[in-house]
Length: 271
Image 1 (tube, one colour):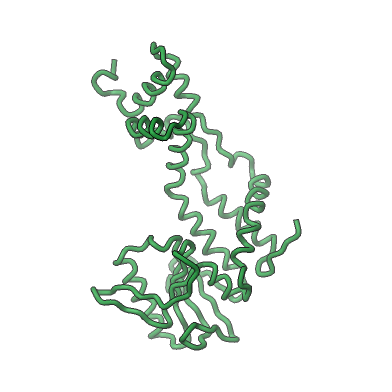
Image 2: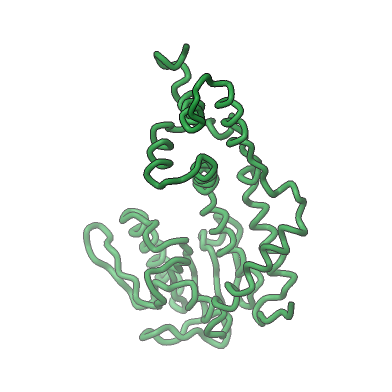
């Protein structure tokens, strides 16, 4: 495959994808029945979901495993979105908690044009996965942090960069601090595509990255140890439990095996 990204090398991008996959860590471990029921699943919900959505037992169990794995994956994808900028010219990703705790710092000696605010030479970035992940207290705290940065540096701007924004945008960020609406032309709310465009000088840089990402992930998984691909045994173990039930209907037998995960010591089930 010809490498078409001009702002990051194929080797750097591939290594970053591999590092992100490895961040998944224990979530890549296979699920057996014990791990599946570690926090005790809700059998009633599984029965409702299976029946209402007209799913098979295999599908509903796979969905529950996916849900359990997915709960903490956003942090890993946040790593991908943030740390990729260490490979992009003029961008710096400080170690966690250092240099003011900024996620990315972008500096350009030639100047950075901020809409309706002129030229600055540094942009300090707070990065969020999704536009609605901050509550009002968190938003207020972040805005105050940005205000303080502007007080200490009159040649900078501060960006709240959102990977999943409501739309493509680079606008003045307005929020509420101490019940008062606040905003500043050098404190911006910026979608990830426009931040890529700013730092790379390529309008569709984020789009181009997205286009090569699936094949790079696929190749990275092939190159990594094959053990990272999980082999879940939950449905097989449930089927084995069901086979031991003296219940004629296979569907009800599997339902009983599922009930036993949450209700094994309850009256009626215990016998």
